[in-house]
Image (tube, rainbow, N blue to C red; front, top):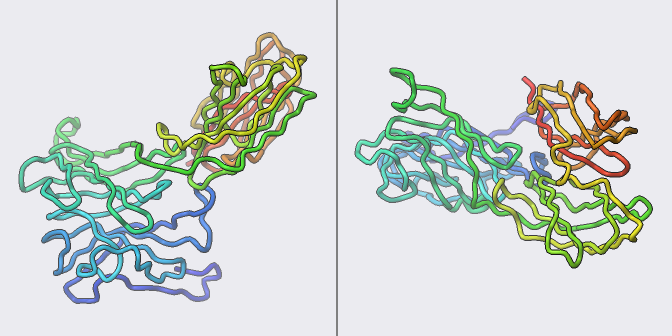
Length: 390
């Protein structure tokens, strides 16, 4: 750990202090406890590597080894499961060799990646694709509790040939990307190894439901600004609304925070859910209802106009075009780019002619996920933009 001025450093040695022990570490992360992707000085550090000692907990070979320290590098003693194998941290695997190379933070736990050569004969490994001993390598993914290190689930990726994972990352839509190697027979190569990349989703992920729901009702222009408190780790939300007596909900998925919607006259109710992953959402939180006079009319909502705003190419390297159509409307429009928490980072005034707006935009912003929003007569049209710079 190096301080910002580089004037001094601090260090710590973790593992079994014996000549017969080795505990190499291959990956370190600083899990965030605040806004998604933003670390704070008080956040801890988590490392993954290999535990390889004479006093094995899980078998006669090496195992995944994960340590968690406080922000000052002191050991987190609650994150441990095998004091005979390592003085600090927790170990995972089976009866043969298991090497941990990467770890990533999810909403409610950590996901580990590496390879296993253990069979389905107990301990943590229960899904090796090779049914016979000696077992070949499988890319092995496992989920552990972020507080205690408790084992939750495991999955092997690959087939009966040698496969492994070297790096794992959580990406903008709450899924995970794993990269590694494979020697699968289906690969065209006649021998050796090939690049192996897998995107997967943790459908067991959980997250808190949104709180702090608020709506600003603007009766003069017949619109509502919805907002709620952003949750740590949650990349997007689902906004739903309907008339009080109606049975059909209008859904905005994903919904930016805040979100602006125009309404016709009537009484309305609305709800918000957090998206823990692409196919798993939190419990629903219901906001306070609102009412508009019968004189209110609307252009339409984002769900009805979902094909009216296009951004391409998407993902983009920073240069992209927007194409927006709205019936035969002609007049001014505001084009905005927002970050994931809803802050406007760019805004320009454009003109729609004959129902069509086309503009090329050069964005200076760093890689990440953004929103493009076009506002016409207080009605917002929104789509997602991904920037991927070299």
